Length: 221
Ligand SMILES: Nc1ncnc2c1ncn2[C@@H]1O[C@H](COP(=O)(O)OP(=O)(O)OP(=O)(O)O)[C@@H](O)[C@H]1O
Image (cartoon, rainbow, N blue to C red; front, side):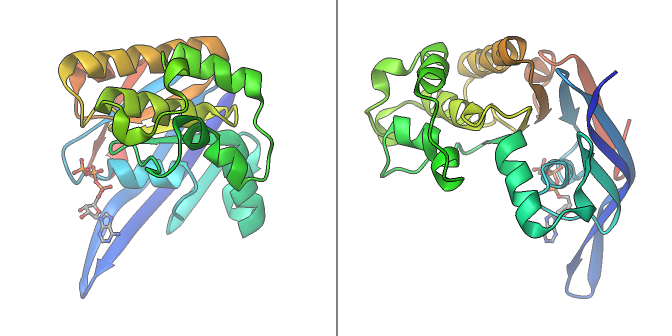
């Protein structure tokens, strides 16, 4: 097995005034290269916190996280940022596209931020696979919710990351459009051998994954 994400004994609390909220408690998790994992759990069970820590957007209070061979806690801020830009693509429930930029520029944005030149053939390929090549000079507000989420997935893939982390990617979409998004995620995993970790409330979406884990009491089972 080739482990790409490993989390060991991870704990995370938030301080709200005098109150401490424990979101994750001694959590262990591994994802193998090419695996598609769905994370479910009731509201407030820590799913987004888990994804942010796996994606190195937030630090754990305790425990360790590895992305490939790299132990995150040992990296400098700059190294961590470069690792994230190169290895991890994010998809959010609310798409988070930049309205004043075209679809093409939205998809290329992670590369512009990392001062890299887009691989134009590859970007065209992922836009074609997303069914959006003809729309690439349009703006996000001219697209439907499902189309915007397909742009967000293409954007997550722009830097050819090994890992895609998706937080409720179908949460804003109707059933049929949600299924389209899941098929797109699954197909891109098969084409580019990415690891996908997806938080969802929706059992239909979770069924596209190879494995479903449940977050409960700050731990996965
Ligand atoms: N920045 C923060 N400050 C304070 N508390 C927070 C913060 N982020 C999360 N929490 C708390 O941590 C717990 C876990 O939150 P998290 O967003 O990870 O849950 P979730 O399972 O993703 O929830 P949902 O399904 O409703 O999106 C919740 O009790 C939440 O209120």
